[in-house]
Amino acid sequence: MKNSILTSLHRERGAQLAADDRVLFFQDVPDEYRAAASGTALVDLTDRGLVEVRGAEAAVFLHRLLANDVRNLSVGQGNSNLLLDAKGKVRFQFEVARVADDVFELSTEPGEAAAVVKALEMYRFSEKVAFVDATERHAPLALVGPHALAFAERLVGANAELAAGAREVRPWQGGEVAVARIPYAGSDGVRLDAGPALVERLWLALLELGAQPIGHIVDDILRVEAGAARARVDVDETIYPQEARLERAFSLDKGCYIGQEVVAKIDTYGGLNKRLCALRVSTDDPVPRGARLMRLDDGEWRDLGVVTSWAYSFVLDAGLVLAYVKRRHQTIGTEFRLGDGPQTATIVPLPVRANTVTPASDGA
Image (cartoon, rainbow, N blue to C red; front, top):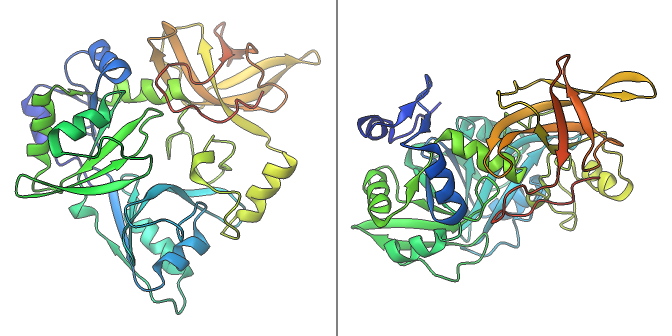
């Protein structure tokens, strides 16, 4: 897996790193959280992957496969998207951008670009389309918070009215910066990519402008408070997109795609057995992934959910988890026992924090 291009810089500047070189925090966790909630936070995403899809039939090919619209994207537009399996379950999550008439870029989760290329190749027959793992030229940074777009405007001249999903390229420091309006961790956000050669200079310029870098701890707080599911943490190949609240990443109107029939049936008839919910927990101690949610039902203790993420919520001043909860038990205020211990978990409304991109219905 590709590591962050900026790891050495972070280490030199005193960031606290985990064993896998992820930044846990830079200086002060509460300050980082405040910046994301009311200012502008800066996130290192340079470990993400990139797949380039090009060819005369690229738009038609991707539109036929992916869960969200592709064919009708204009140059400079993009969206969150999914590749599902035939059963309608999530294989890959990524952002799609149309960068030219016959060229699309898929920004993938870290370490997944090669697997996405392989998956796309499986569906290519005689179409005039080619796939390239372009991860080595991908070096995105994210600005998060209510002033994110204003920072991008001040630094690189980004359009102050840049629409959600839109992308533009601006000259900067003898090179170019791609600017895209993409939510991050459930909050409004802007993605900047100047490529590996300029990314360190871009990072330092954003710091000088006043952006506050945030590490993995605050990153998790933001997304858990927003109910934003993370690939390979809250979402795997056993999950339907509606279960993980991924409605922004698929379309019910675009026609056929892999898994579309199942997705449409779920929307029409319901039938989800579980749904990602946020629950306030009665302990400040971290709750491990896989912890079970137990509840008395018809006089018996039943296993009714599983925890996938934990964070400490500054809004609630309490621990907060994301968990898949079985239907009929998703009402706000429903209380569960955490495993066999005395701790409890109670469903709370989403989003927990203001200034978030509001998820779809809570499924109650």
